[in-house]
Image 1 (cartoon, rainbow, N blue to C red):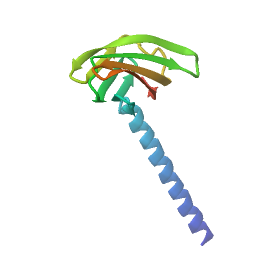
Image 2: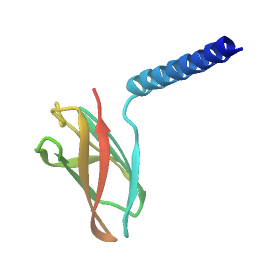
Image 3: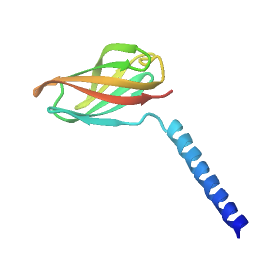
Image 4: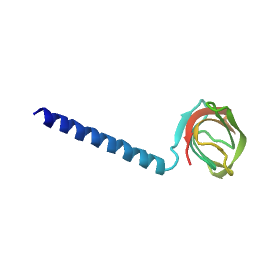
Length: 128
């Protein structure tokens, strides 16, 4: 009876480990994860990758969007970059290695438009 419980526990543990490994593999290969934040005038959904930052304005009308970033844990920063408007409410900043290092970055998204100017801050994980 004791061996049966031990074997069952071992099988459950092996199943959990397999599920965690599978989830990690899917997360690493599925691309950047969108992050949403809301301010007083604007709300945005941002997807950050090594060479591109995609900003979808979910609330408010933005005419211009600029993005700056800092990696607080390493003391790195990215100068402010102006995103180009690709469609109404959709902006993209591109460049070779915008983020020269993978990891956790804090983004400052500055939006201006008829509602005024506002800077939204959010944390994102940049992967290859």
